Image (cartoon, rainbow, N blue to C red; front, top):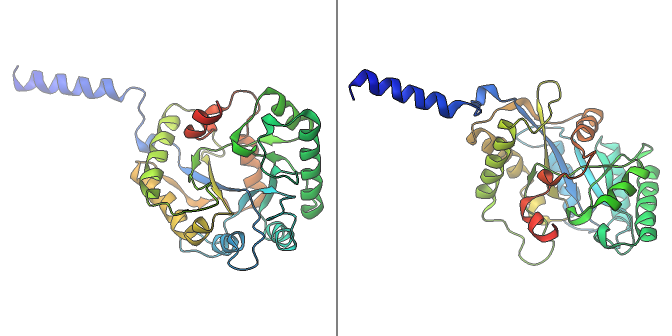
Amino acid sequence: MDRRRWLRAAFGLAAFFSIGCPRAAELPPLRFALTFDDGPSGEERNNSTEIILDTLKDNPTQNGIKAIFFAQTRSSEGGATPRGRALLARECAEGHVVALHDGSTWGHRNHRSLDDASLEASLADGIADLAAVSQRPVRLIRPPYWAFDARTFAAYARHGLSMLLTDVSANDGKDWGFKASPRRYLHMAAEMRRLRTRLEAAQIPLADGVAPIVVSFHDTNDYTARHMAEYLAMLVDQTREAGLTVAARPFYDERDLLEAVALLRSSTTLPALDMVPWWWRWIDW
């Protein structure tokens, strides 16, 4: 094959593989909606929820970040303690969104395993607890263990709750024993590659030309709390490493807009497994 024929063939092959695979410049910029599960912490010293709130307010990546806190309102280790209730009030006062994870005294039970009466009580009590603190409607829920079905989904809807899952998980849900995450950079890089695939397939709706990306952490994890500033920088860096762009202000920093994009990204129909962390699909599905 002569040089001209070889070049034509090469360019034709490149054009073939470029179909349906947008370049980074053709993909929307990303903006991160941070979420935290399982809190608030009730610890009096080195409180992980408090450390995270301090970091969101003041850090090298972007000051004044707002987040959604999915709370366990009656946990004996958090929401039911004076410290935990004070932190819920602080979250509201500082412009974060408080949302429901669980409203029962037994705490963090799989909603699919609850009978109808227990599920109804958990939702009603949790909503009442949060509304009393925030003086705002409670609109969002994230089910414990990411576990839902048609029955629990219908219960959420009856209570005016939209289910928000996640696009990117820090995989930091362990709250006992060895909590360090030595593979956190490799893990986040893999999450961003999966995210890019979904963006290329136009599976994520846009808000004002930006893709709102839901990121999940756990504010009861003290390792996460100590490394929160690192995680914020990591999200931006790994986005760029994946060939994607971030918005001028990478994180949402206004409560009403954050809640609005969360409602946009919330699940309104079943199934919603593309927003369940892939390893939990193996466990619960």
